[in-house]
Image (cartoon, rainbow, N blue to C red; front, side, top):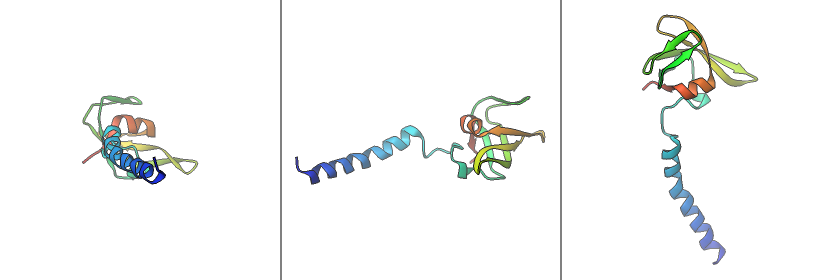
Length: 103
């Protein structure tokens, strides 16, 4: 097979696979997975019950980001304000696993 048709076929297959991968991986969802999505004032909603230090957060509860925690110039976690006024440090992994950005 000549080189040009193979390249066109590869480009066509890649273009067709992108929407499928986006849907499968959930890149269009509102999950708080990107560092640049989190800013002070962002409201997060718990997607499951989670314990943050001594506070239990129920699914659907809202928290608000009050501070971004940086380590070596990269986002490492956030401080969130709970409904009762307490502020808790949360790692970025916990935010990604248990919260999504409120709509």
